[in-house]
Length: 430
Image (tube, rainbow, N blue to C red; front, side, top):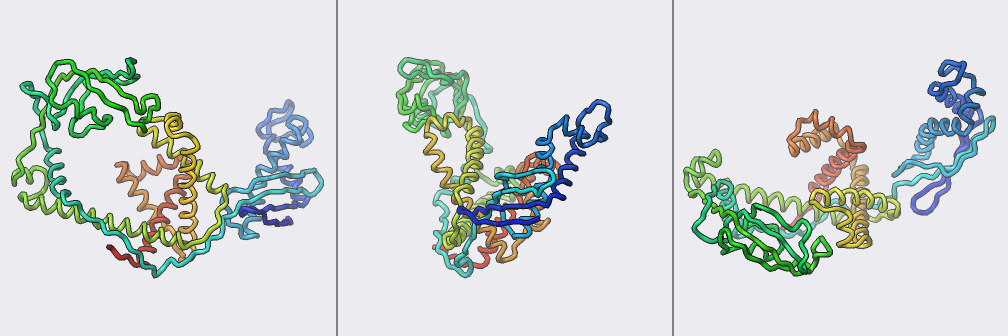
């Protein structure tokens, strides 16, 4: 096999491959034998028909196609190895000339990984803003614990207050027309933690049981349903039930009930420990991010647009999945934001992700950082804990998704490179 290499723009090389006629015939004959095993030819058992009979039933072009499909992976693997190509996608055939009895000629193109020129990535000093625990964090944490242990009682002798949970009916109208999906019966709403549009829950405070009343709101200008965005609306409401939250008394007995604490002081100490641990985690995460961003900033790499486009396509799929999880559709997002705006943002993110990945791989190569079986196992165990599934079941489920194990290996490599950078650079928390 002879090859001729020509470098093209955008990290692409054209490869002209010449296969000796003897090998080309061998590929063809193997394809004839393989195809004959799947074709019913009268008068012959499968796999036993002579070549000329198989050609009459299948056609020479189909046989050549099968021969190429079988031979190309091996041919490309040899070309890649001989030329030490670092490819980012599989080679693709641009043209071929395949005549039986003559040398076969193939013209293919291969996209290569762009060269990464690392700047300084060790012995850096990076300033990072230190995370400050909010002044009210401790009190809010205690309040959350109390709320989790709270009970509710139904009240009938007063109007609603802003800490109640209510059960109510509502029906919305815009310009006199009923809002599609803008109504409900016996809907439960926590007035202190409402996700309704601004001003809705607030107008449900100090309202009586069983009486009809209207509230007036305005949909936000950036509301996801464009036909409602910025529109004034009237909601006809009636409260069916008022539930008052009763908080337990904060004392030693309560501390003993909610955890393995001897007394209230132990509970408070545990809350403070949690806040301190959270602060340390945030400072560490922010430090790792700042170091990595500085390393990427110092690196130089000329990324071809095709890599960014492929990554953007992947981001589109991820974005659609997120929308679906939030109860929205791709079409609603397009209507609200516009295709050009969405794709501009995703392509910018894609460019960042591609460069980050290239820099990580380059550092891993320079410092001989690899992913061991133990590293991969730790990643699987982490997923198992997250989804509360045993590791064996997790592996079985993941194996049904192509490429997921490669993605996990890449995540494990990212973690190891991030740890290496954290250990070999300095951070000033300010």
